[in-house]
Length: 264
Image (cartoon, rainbow, N blue to C red; front, top):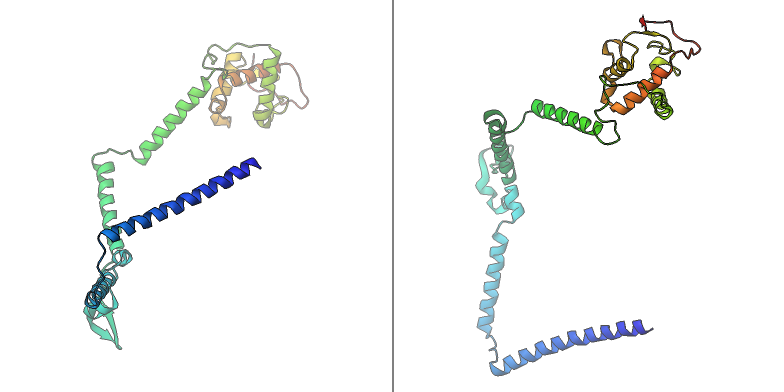
């Protein structure tokens, strides 16, 4: 209740302030007129004012609007000056000027084309599409490398030159999860082989050591359809899959594919 009363008082105070300002304005006008009253216009002066106002109004109407200027339009009163000499069946053609917007657009494209030519083909300030594509590829490669070098991403410390087999259960479990996601379509759910070779026996096409398996997964075998997984997995993930694959040796799953490669 108290807050409502306060707001009501503030509203009333604001109304009183506005009215006071208006009264003060009236008082100022009254004092000014009392000191130096304004003379009333005579009938002749009123007529002069009316004629001047009519002239100004006619001048304002005669001035072309911004829209008229942009569109290059001409008033109806000037059509007789735009008519061309020839006519057909009582129909005359008007020689209308090109709209301003079209001229600006037309000459603007010419200026843009000249600037484009000098920028890309004369001074070679700008990059061509091929150059931009090469730069984007380089940036993508740098971003990939930066991702692989992040802490916890495996970093570059693991590679085909220093890879060592591990029997760590957690590592092998992570590798098994990755294997089922990316390797099962070609090597089977248990490594028994399918499109790709059997990974559970002692025969290997590209080497069966930890370093060899890591390298094969990392760079792939493009001629046989195996992609290079380094483009989508970091070194730690490739290492986990390698350890899982090596742990499958001797598991003898059902439906295993015939041996391929050399025995190791």
